[in-house]
Figure 1: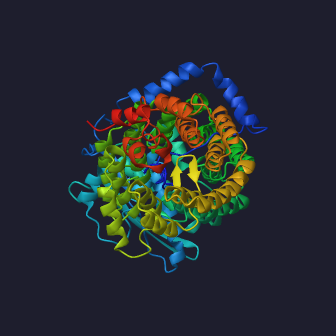
Figure 2: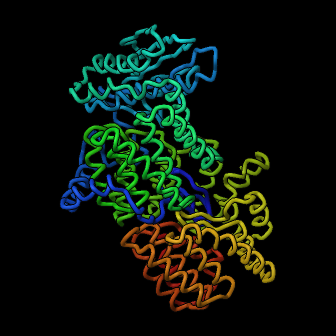
Figure 3: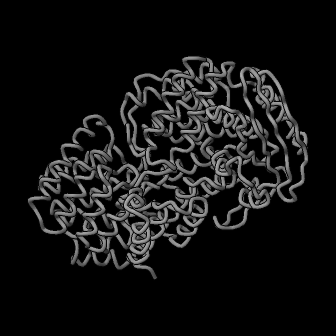
Length: 638
C-alpha cells in the first residue's frame, strides 16, 4: 500500500506506494478493445439503453443499502447474526497427502453451496482458509474474529473409489454441537454429499431455501473427478497467490491447471469462470501482461462460460470482471454486477469490484464504503484490508489507514512488507521517516532474506533520508525487481540505479542506468502500445536523459491514452508523473501547473503526499520555487 515503490499486492487487493508497494486496489491499466466479442457485445447492447438507470440502481444497492452492513470504522467489532456461518478447512485423513487439494475442494463446494442461500451470511473462503485443519481451534475466538454465530468443521478420507466425509455444525458462541453426520459413499457421489451437507446445515439454521437456490446447490460442478482435482489445486493457488513471493508464477500455474481441467471436461463451467479471472488479473492488475493476446484468452474463457450457462450469476460476475479489467466499461460492469448480486448474496467479490469501479470513476468515498462491505463477508481478507488502507490514504485519512493495516497485521503479523507499509504511512503523512526506519532495522535484524519483500520500501526510505549507502543496499536486496511500483506505474531496477546516481551527482553512472532502463521500457511499450502508464514511464526516462521534446510528447500521448475521465485512478497517476517529467525536462511552469491541479481533492497514489513532496528526490528540480514550497506547506499535517 505503500506509495508507489513497492510491491504489487491484493489488490490487491494484492497496492501502491511511492517506491513502495502496489497495494492500491486492483492496479488495473487501460485496455484495448478486442476485435470480436460477439456474445458480450450483444449482451451489452441489450443493457445500454438503461445504462444510467442501472448505474443508479447499482450504486443504491451496493453503497446505499443497509443489509447487515453498517458505516463504521474498520476496527469495530463485527456484528453476529443468528444465521451466520463459517465453513472451516476440512482435515485430510487420506493416506495420500496429495488428496489435500481434493479435501480443500470438498470444503469449498460446501461453502459455495451455502453462500448461494440469501437467508444466510456465509464467510468467504479467503478468510476461513487461515484456520488450518489438524490444529486445536478456539471456536469462540474464531466466531468473534469472523463475526459469525456458527461454524462447520469436517474431514475427508479418500481411498480407491470410496470416500468418507464427516461434517459437524457447532454454535461458536457456546461450543455446542448442533448437528453431525458421516457419509460413506462411492467417490462418484462426493458432489451429492456436498449438496446434502449444505441442505442439512441450512435446515438446522432454519434458513429459507428458494427453488432456484435448491437447484443451484444440487448442480454438481463436474462429473470428472480428475478435472475437479485440477480445478481445486488451481483455485487454491489463485486464493493464496497474494501471500506468495511468486504470485505471478502461481497464477500462471493455475491457468495451466485450469486449461487441463477444461480439456478433460469442456462443460466445466466453474473452471472457465476461474480461468477468465486469472487471465483478466494478469492483463489488468499492474499491467503485468497488458497484451492483446492475454485479453483474447480472457475473452475466450468468458465466452465459454456464457455458452454453458448464459443466465448464471457467475457468468454475469465473470462478464463484469472482463468489462472492468479488460475493457474499462464501468457502466456495463456495474449492470452485470447488479444481476449477479441477486443470486450471489454472500460473494464479497461483488462489493470489492464495485468499490474499485467507483474509485476509478472518481467516487473515492463511495468506493471505500463498498470495500468495507466486502470485508463484512471476508473479514480476514488481507488484500482487501490493504486496499481499504490505500483508500484512506487517497482521502488523506492517515490514522484510519494505519488502523486498517493493523487489522491486516493481526492476520499476518510477520509480513515484512505490511509492517514496512505501516511505517511508510508516517512518511506520507508527516514527512517522518523514523517509524519506517525503525521497522526496517528490525526486519534487517531477522536476517538478509527478511527484507526482500520490503526492499522497495527500504529504497524509498533511503531516498527520503538521502542515505546513498542504504539506498545501494536496498537495490541489492531488490535484485531484478522494480525499484518503485504505484498501481500501473512500475519503475525498473535500472531506473532506481539512475535515480540514486543522480542524487549523488554521479552523472556518468546515472546516464548508463537510465539508458538501460529505457531499453527495457521501450520493449514494454512496443508490446503494450495502448497502455498509457507504460508510455508515461518512457517519457520520464527520456526526461532523465535530457530528451526534452520526446519526453513531453510521450507524456502527453500517455495522458491522451488514459484520461482521468476514463480511469480516475491511473489517469491521475499519469498526470502526476507527467508533472515530474516536465520538472525533469526543465519545464517548471508546466510542472507546477499540473501539480497544482492534482493536489486538490483525493490523491491517487502517494507521489503528491506531503512527505513525498517534501523529501523525495523526484521533486528536487522544483525545490526552492515559491509556488512549489507553498503547495508543500499547504499539505503539512495540522
